[in-house]
Image 1 (tube, helix red, strand yellow):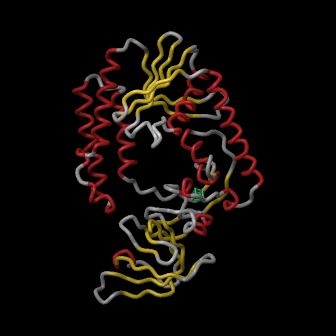
Image 2 (cartoon, protein in one colour):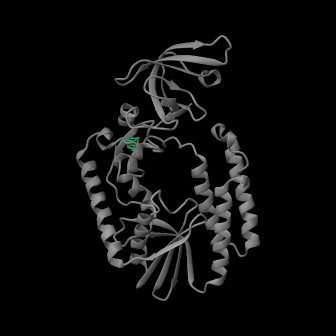
Image 3 (cartoon, helix red, strand yellow):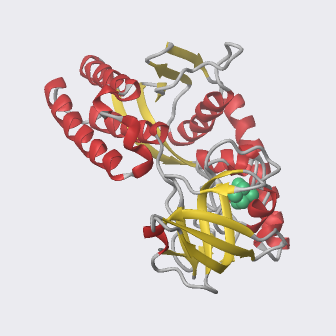
Length: 350
Ligand code: SF4
């Protein structure tokens, strides 16, 4: 059982990455990382197939930016697939995911990486792959997949494994926002006059558009407003609760659900669909089933919620003590009952 961190304090945002900016739009606390001071690191969010594919994709692009040939790239990708397979095999909740070399997303990422390697070999432009840039005022920071510059013309490319389009057929707003965010960084760091932003996906091919400097400047102004508003709230709020804004969009895959009391109070109202419920309770009863395979816990609530029972595999409860306070994450069910799942974990308060 791992220890949960306690909150030591929080400070204002000094800068924002694109992902932090996306999270900040729905929850100030959810967006915090370096500015949330904790006694120990937060629990790692369990990976799912989509996040593993996303990570593999970025790694493939990183390799594609440096590999001397397709042959070398493929050899390195084979090694990455082995690493990924070992990780998948190590997680109980992923044991039905099978062989990663058969995953569509993995094969699409390989195809995109191979194409990028070929294009790199054929283009005369200066290539800056996986480039981290910071805006001139230091407020925005981001890592571009690929940027090529030829004279005063730049091309910014983001590679996606999923479809570029939403259910209405329009380019997904999050992708448009991402290229605008990165356009700000490019204009601030390169003396270019024309910037082409390109999205590339194995499902939809290439979509590209010229980004005007004025559009990027306007987008930046909106982010700065958001950041200033968040910092105003941080400077006037005494508790973590005052910064939390629970919602389905914000809380899904947030890394703070185990320590966020606002989430735990509202989790049954926001429409969670996965195994994302959290239970914080003090063990007041511990009964081992006759088969000795499961244990049923009686848990008195730490907050204002009702007393609950939870059945879990006996091996998970060997170190548990009556009177101990534990936080259970990754539970399924709903307000009437909660169930242990392959994604469940137990933590002790720091
Ligand atoms: S769990 Fe929800 S409310 Fe709490 S910090 Fe995360 S996003 Fe915000």
